[in-house]
Image (cartoon, rainbow over the protein chains, first blue to last red):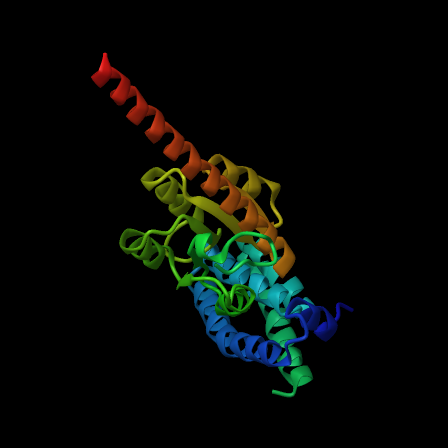
Length: 109
Length: 154
């Protein structure tokens, strides 16, 4: 199973700055639910490029905070959007939601 | 004068525009570049507005943003001023995106997650190209001036 969060990698990226690390995590946790909501709407309206774009944004941000499992699920969702496979996207979105909840729990936020 | 660790005089460092829809990325870059003059845009539209108002020659930008294709923004920036150094940063894993960005005029291409050393290296290269460009312009200017003087004496 992919690691949910690699604190060490993020700490290295922010050069040991714990305050910056927490700030980045808080921003990610605040910003992602809105993105997930937009993905749900895109899925409902059959907007594959919209879904792809939002999934890509989550993937990039998750990579920046070393949230590996979220990054991986968002990457798969982006690919499903690119392939216009909305049925598959629906399944992956559930995984992404689950991984985001796991991340929130892991971080104790 | 304040010398930085990379030997480039801080006063000569160009201001930078960062364009990304991801607030996490802005926070990270802001911290990496806290000693430099950095403007932040969260959309291509905002980026174009800032570039219209300010004299900025270094742009660090994401390739995928809602509202406008990053490649389109890249072309618009380059068309407006070809010397602007554009460093593309993306979470894309597609080789095709890299090639398209280079064709559209990107000067450098970095992958997310970003680290400080890589960003600083890219900025240093951008700074060197701008400095070269400026000194070439000065040289041309002097040659023209000398040429005019000679014509006046003839």
